[in-house]
Length: 300
Length: 314
Image (cartoon, rainbow over all chains, first blue to last red; front, side, top):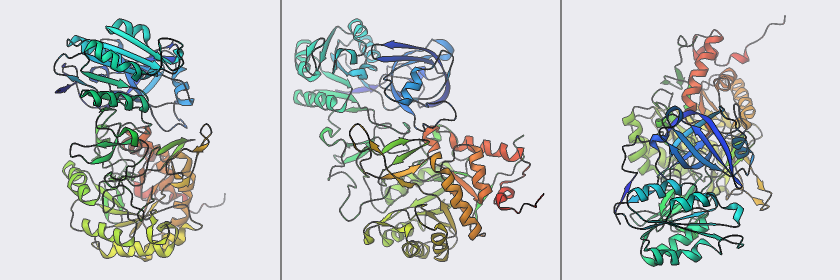
């Protein structure tokens, strides 16, 4: 499958740092949808891009930006375009974000990362979201459908309240299948338990996924077994989001067959499923370029 | 107010248009930050420490946010000196940025080899020798924690480097007396001193009840360590009045940078702040320029060391 980047529309490239303004924060189950105006950002976003937001106001004791995949954009919205993200308020930084009021300032760096590639031919696609990892898939679904692809979605989570965007998903995809680990809604089990069936029924030729590493590993495995492509957006912890800190690395096989520890912020967050050494994430494989030898360790 | 202050800085003979540089490990090799500000306007890009061979670094998690700072345990990931020269140094040169190359090694010989490889490369303003690396030959004891080991590295690098190339030794604050190490490095041929490197720290995840970092311990950086850094600069400046100092440690604003100059630094590096604000180095330059103008200083040179002045009793 040949792939092209972006939605075919002329876009300005590269990230910018702008002062954004909060438009709204609304609850969505256990999550929050934060909408903000960010001049110049919306026009540059394609599905899979992420934003990095400073948190805590100025001065702040929280030095690291919080990164979120873009959930939606309105290029014609207020003050040069609006951006929506989904926030899981699980710590002081994300809590600060969801407490913002309309009109509050936000320090925005965006768009960042390598987004999803769209197939050149309108092949059927299956989109898989784990928890609020579904956030970037709605924009992607719209673009795929505009290009003539059939889109089927699968959303999975531990329990019903950890799903995001089920109603939206039903509207945007031809079919939506929901799974929960505890069976509180949909099919009891994991997304990978239903993935083969959905691919069989609807002729899926490419899988797009966003969610926890374990889920992405499963998706990549299914794709590999069927000989089809998968694109996975990873959720690695990042300190800067722009490629300078080297904290968000994972082992990825290059075109030359050599494994390197690569930055998920600049070379990802979207990777082809067969590039990532999923079972080695969190380690440095011994055959990785520059892997430690017993006599040369240490240093930070 | 700003605009009339002479902002140039002098690092042991290398004249820079700004006293604000990036800090090693916080700017990669400049390309990423160049999207947010013009890297040719600041003093120099101090590149991430480079070793002889490619290096994968440590397993993740590699960082943990801490109050007003962060811990990192990257493990000196890098492409090795050959790739660095072919890609990063070449790009920086073509871009027209000034470059301070940070070098590292696990042995004295490795430091010397890396320095030797850079000997005939053009467009380098200074070498910063990251001696806060574990010494493989001495059970991982950090070079910068032992005056003799620090001295051996600096001596070896000096021998492989042109006499015209300024060498700065980067010191760790994790020592009993930083002046002893500073003195040893200067005696071994360092033209200047960079201080401070991160200070060793650790955080434990109270949910998993295990250390957060894959490397267990990590380097603490950010505003949390700024008072330690200012103290180190002050002490070394007092003891070694003539030795150029590149000050760093938690600089996030122009006034933070001013503290370092007042304490005796000749220029400063901005590190962790660039993670928080990718345009921080240039913003800090402008804030510093304004702060100097407001205080009636005509140049950066005038303010260096100013906090050490005798104050007459009223």
